[in-house]
Image (cartoon, rainbow, N blue to C red; front, side, top):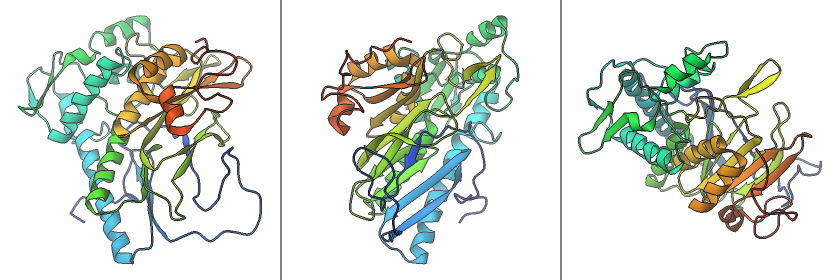
Length: 382
């Protein structure tokens, strides 16, 4: 391990702590298709596998690889993962002042600045996602996140309308210029700050996945802060299986179950990271178009995508858009998305796009088209 490199267990918090909305289901448990824990009985011997886990970007990280390995092979995997996560941290952390992104944010001018190629490409993709999501995804939202009391340097009181108006003047994807050929990133306003917390954990999972492919490994499951990417099968020969949590700030139980043998799953919701103000829940999710926290009844939304970065980003964007506009746009774009809407009585209503149903089967209580038996998909009110 090179000097200064961090192993997965040594990584400390650099990004906003992401909420974790998925449960990793043990491959040996044999949960039925309808979900729920197995009946009590004798312990089942786990099949051979390699498990690497620790902390990354303020949340848990794990890598599970099917099959037995020698201690030296396991150490090599650990070193590879540590090197990738350390590099991501050095490039796009908003918590360490020496990261490439922190240095860009601190620059008080509008000159084009050299920026590492890989995260520059990620920012370019983020701007494209922002346009496709009608502005719901915006990597310049950092000043608003601080005003609302989330993130490093955050305030502890509700922002005043004048403060929100001032911050919104330098929030917007149009205020960034990405020059991939020249390798530079530029602000149109010196006060612009970039935050990749809503897409970087998924991106890190993609980088680990690419390295595993390069190493000739084809059966693995990566979890970076709850953003998952999987390939192949678990140690028991069955596809990797994970559960989307029922939206509950205290209890942790599965609401819907997903097979992840190829691709990524990301979830964004309102029930892990929030604070109470005058008895009202204030979500950590900011709508960059208004400057306010989201106020609709969407409890969580999960997205399946070939790449974890885009699953991560789209889950955030759809969460901002809410149960109606989010579902409508996801259908238009052919995204595989699963929504859990909170009802006034505390119960939940699921909704799934047709692409989700095609990939995973009907949502709980849904018919073959993804529409609830009593009406059309997306019928929940905000």
